[in-house]
Every structure is written in structure tokens, then in C-alpha cells.
Amino acid sequence: SGMMLGTVLYETMGDYQATMQTVADIYELDDTLEAWDAAMEEYILNASAHGQQSCEEQWKALDRQLRTFYPGELEGSTLANIRSIYQHTQAEMTDMLTAGSDSERATYYTVLSARKDGMLFLLDQLMRLHITAGVENYPRLISRNLSALVSFFAILLVSFILLIICSMRMIRAVCTPIELLVTDAKRIA
Image 1 (cartoon, one colour):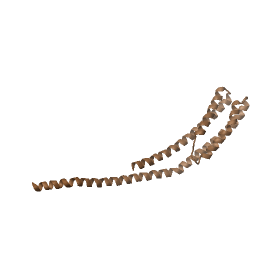
Image 2 (cartoon, rainbow, N blue to C red; image 1 turned 30 degrees about the vertical axis):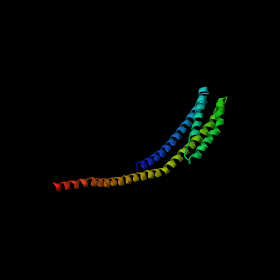
Image 3 (cartoon, one colour; image 1 turned 90 degrees about the horizontal axis):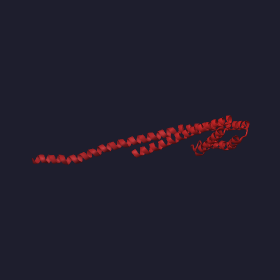
Image 4 (cartoon, rainbow, N blue to C red; image 1 turned 45 degrees about the horizontal axis):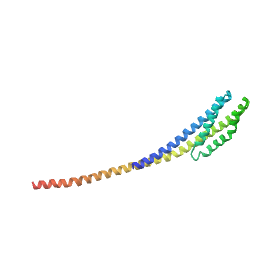
């Protein structure tokens, strides 16, 4: 019964962990998008090599996160849309980093900023879908935990009763011959 309860609790913890990891990944992706936007703004204001390098690093970090992020089945199409926007933004990002004038960089920044806002909107939708799926899944997880807990206590109660019955039989099995021996010894005396 302990193994059964442990298995159910372990599975439930795994479900909770997966849900929390997805939420953390969504927040991390959101932070990376914001960091990329801040790096682009910095680069637009100061067309320096450091700003360009920072912009490229944030862009690559966003790419890594989008490649490794795996949401649930319901959220897959939303993530595919975010990845699609990212792929379509690649050309504008390269053009902005290689643009020769401030006005060209500003034009590309406007497009990139709009795409970033689109990705943030979809990321918000992704979070909403994930939370909705979690809320719908929560009663099932609680029911599974309660069933396991009830089963555990039922098995524990039955085991306790069986332990008492077996203990009484063992006590009788040991004490009855001793009582007979005492009785016979008194008769002999």
C-alpha cells in the first residue's frame, strides 16, 4: 500500500513539476523577448559594436529557447505560430544589424518591435492555454490523490485488524500450553 501511494504521489508530483516547468519556461521566454527588445532599443540609440553584439546574443538566446521549449499538446499550435514569427523575423533582424543609417535601423526596429509584440501576445495566449489545461486537469489529480489516500488508509486498517487477530492467535498458541503445564504441575503437586 505504501508503494502504491508512493507511486501515485510520485506521478502527481511529476505532473505538477511539468506544469510548473512549463510556466517557468514561458516566463523565461517572455523575459528573453523583453531583453531582446531592450537590446534592440540600445542598438538603435547607440549604433555601437557592443549594442550590435548584445542584440545578436539576445536573438540567439531567443532561438535556443524556442528550439528547446516544449509545451503540452494543446499549446503546440500557439508555439508553432511564435516560432513562425521568429523565422519570418530573421531577415529583418539581419537587415537591421547590417543597416548603414540610423533611419534604416529605426525602420527595421519598428517592424521588429511589432513582431516582438505579436510574439508576446501569442506567449500570453500560450500561458492562458496552459493555465486553462492545468485548471481542467487539477480535479483529476486531486481525485487520484484522494483515491490513493483512501486506499492506503483502508489497507492500513485491514492490516491493523489482521495484525491484532494474528497476535491474539499467537498469544493463545504460546499461552495455552503454558497454562496447561501450570495446571498439570499444580495437580501433580
